[in-house]
Image (cartoon, rainbow, N blue to C red; front, side):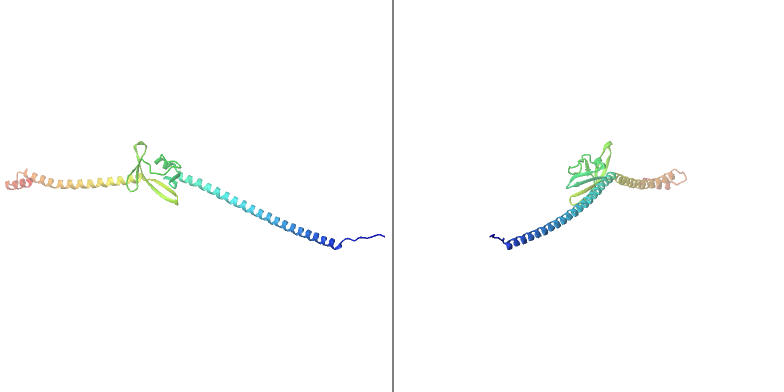
Length: 219
């Protein structure tokens, strides 16, 4: 006789269900992972585009600032006034004219009034230059930022000389007026004396009148 042995079918069915569930979870997890990867890729792409735009904007701003710096440098160099730029009292830029008034100017040095500038009046300074000449200078300070300053060095020599010339002319005019007044005061009694002397020389006047004229001349 043959004996037939049957396995535990309930155990096999349970294992099959577990495998199916595991496969289902694996598929779902794979889908979620793929979705996360797509979302991450999309975010990376968006951030890359934002970074590219930001870099492009920064490049444009840097180019604009560089262009503006060159234009300002050209403008400062073309000004007929000395210009010195400082930060926390230290020079970081100046134009050619300012160096003509202060030859010792140097970047990264402290700004101080040059030793050869002699104090004149009302914030003006006399600066001796080559050829025995001099310039009258008026420095003017402007605050650009809390720690930055712009020092303008105005050459007011022409104005100063014009004022001196006007003062000299006024003085000469006053002296001329005084001289004329003195001459008039001298000329009046002299003319009177001349008249009296002329009468004394005449033979037709009496001795009494002659004595009167002589007394007047004596006074």
